[in-house]
Length: 141
Image (cartoon, rainbow, N blue to C red):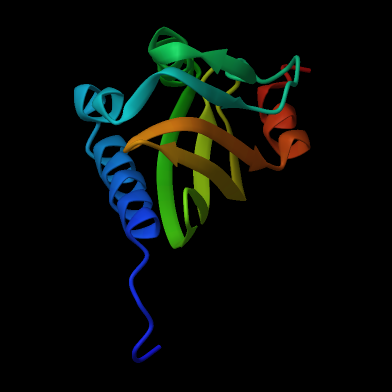
C-alpha cells in the first residue's frame, strides 16, 4: 500500500524468519541455531507414531528434533509458498514430500508453521500438518 509506514518489528520478524528458512534449506545448522533464543520452544503435535513429534525446549531440544528428523525422514521436497508476517509473528505456508525412512513410505502434505520472534530471535516454532497422513507413513503394519 502506498504511503503505509513500515513496521520495524514486522520487518525484523520477516528478516529473522526468512533467514531461518534459508539456513534450513541449505542445511546450515549453525546459522539456524544462531537465530534461536536459548529458551526457544520448538515442536509439532504429539503422535506416538511420528518420531519427531512433541514440543522441545532450548537449542538442545531443536538439535534433538533435527537429529530425529534426519534419522527418520528423507525430505524430498520442501516448498515454502508464502510467508505472512505481522509484528512479532509469522505464518509460513507450504508443501512437503517426505519418505519415512523406517518404512520407505512416501507422504506429501501441506503445512503451516507459526513462528514468534522476540528481540531478534525465534522464541517459538510450532508446526501444523496432517498428523494422520504422516503417522500412516510411519506405521509398519
